[in-house]
Image (cartoon, rainbow, N blue to C red):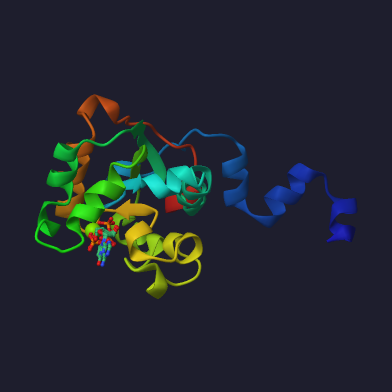
Length: 193
Ligand SMILES: Nc1ncnc2c1ncn2[C@@H]1O[C@H](COP(=O)(O)OP(=O)(O)OP(=O)(O)O)[C@@H](O)[C@H]1O
Ligand SMILES: O=c1ccn([C@@H]2O[C@H](COP(=O)(O)OP(=O)(O)O)[C@@H](O)[C@H]2O)c(=O)[nH]1
Ligand SMILES: [Mg+2]
């Protein structure tokens, strides 16, 4: 490699190594004739991720956002809010009869929550994997819960668990105008377009 670097200028070396790389270096413009992002099924999937009050109190917001950015997902909605009992009872309605439900409401209203909508290919399934098992004691190291929490009653983050659930939760937590449609300039790297 050192020899090659002596022989070629940087630009020639890039062309020599990879035509694709040269396309990337030429900027954020989609090359003519390429498929548009919308033509790839599933890339517009969206999910609700909420950093719960313990995650905010423990100043984990940046690290959690970083994991989703690094993975390649796109942030399309973000806000910090004090969650109301009304919103929570709709969000966790299916858990109303569980013995831990009163404690869950108390926990979720104990301080601010950071709510986000992330977009990308299979983002719902992937983010559940990234978040890990509901019970942190069973969550794999490398997951958010497996790295940052130890008890099910303080498991740091929420992630939608199905397409229907994600649509319902996004509508519950966000107004349409709070979500932004914007294009990332790294389609070629992320989706191979
Ligand atoms: N046994 C328990 N004791 C205390 N809290 C619990 C218990 N089980 C679940 N919870 C809380 O209720 C939340 C919702 O439970 P659910 O079964 O939906 O898990 P989840 O889908 O992994 O979590 P979330 O919906 O918050 O992403 C859990 O994330 C956790 O905060
Ligand atoms: O035995 C339990 C199960 C759940 N939860 C809480 O309830 C939330 C929602 O439960 P769900 O089954 O939706 O789990 P999740 O989707 O969060 O993994 C969890 O995140 C926990 O905060 C709890 O406190 N005790
Ligand atoms: Mg759940």
